[in-house]
Image (cartoon, rainbow, N blue to C red):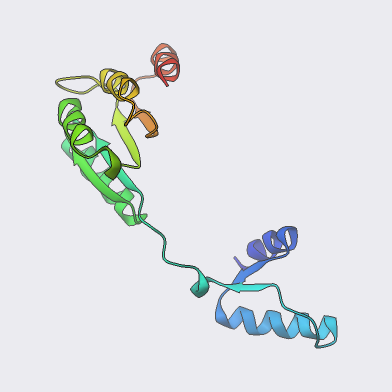
Length: 150
């Protein structure tokens, strides 16, 4: 991993490393520069904590919803899960500013994911929220329809 970070660092003149790697890097840089000059080493600890992205997960299947929700939480995302499009729309109407991303299945009970996407794009306060559509069906037509909708 240190090699990948160094390669990235060489391209951007910054190397992000752990404390141990920082000492070794500073020694190496210091010996190359004759001990003078400033180091371009940045430590992870200096970065502020990452804000958790707030995701609205809309999935009809309970087990799939639990698995996807757990994976998203493991990535430090804050997840609100609902089983159908109507409940998702109620959440969005009540708290549109509390959602950063919508991850929805295309085929849902009550209103479909496509109908939910249509509602989202028609409401000014919601239409800037990114929507990712999921489907188990291989339908180029549905992909095209969703992309045209926004």
